Length: 472
Image (cartoon, rainbow, N blue to C red; front, side, top):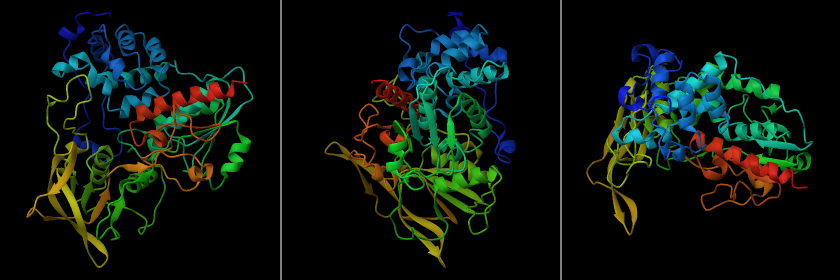
């Protein structure tokens, strides 16, 4: 630890966001950066704890104290080497990870955690700027072929590790560009897509083969897949959205959040949609149903599309501002989270259930909602409506952001005959499915989760696949 008094002498300083009046007019990344001196100072605040709870909380088991010290000493290449030893894409997690490491930082006990996520992003950018990040082309090939289905963080991390092990890897993606939800699910104002492209160029140089516009299970049959490859890694995500089964669901102007976000990202890439196809918030009263990160992304995107107003509702009660006694450090804090999008202008409401959607001439005009309470009965929370609290929220555009229930079964998964668990995810014990030489990584087996969990799962799956391929 280079500065044992850093956490005492240096106050916490976050980079913050670009001004609201500037950022709502474009889709550029909202987060600012600190200068090099400030970043070294922030890294010096790491206490190098005897028990690094940050490391314990990080799904990819990042060696956080070690690379904080390297930053403080100005050893950017060493910091990057340590970071990338456990994470194929620290530039992604440095931007979009909710940073469970920071919530478990010892300094978080008094809400002064080390700015680990921002420090991580800085390390990667310094490494790229200084030319430390170079393609690593495997010197020896094993002759084994692996198909990775899905190019999100789980699929790409699996492909990276497998390729470095010397196997020939082909990544299949049904969309027109690589990246999965990183490409089309996360808005550009949180993750500039040039960051993905920069990493993809390295992967191509290193020998990974990417095939877009290819739906495995349709364009390539499951039987052909198993015949052509020595192992298959399923990384297709959990893309079956949770629907709102109420009267008026079929009205025009009601859309799944991911359809809305994906289309805007495609527009940012230069794709043109007809007026009939375009999902546009301009001059509309937007209602976002669902209070998670995807709902927040809908808020920020609607504001940039010049919505007349944006309201976000959540069926659960409003979280507390501070940790409850039953939710102690170092566990994840179940507290109120306010995103950069919320700060741009949005009404947020909690404990509201949608009873029905109302329309006129086939188009949505509003949602009838009712206040609810959650009571614990026989050890489980159950929702109850509060009589007399019904009200109408006016809305010209309703975006459903209530999460995902499972991977899509039809096509590839059913065709392979993989077994599912009780939640409808692919049943995978240590990434191994019920079908020989078929493995699973990320949300397809875990359910919808964080980017950092997907990266860890992809790397774990690659390890299991490598063991399988090299056993004979």
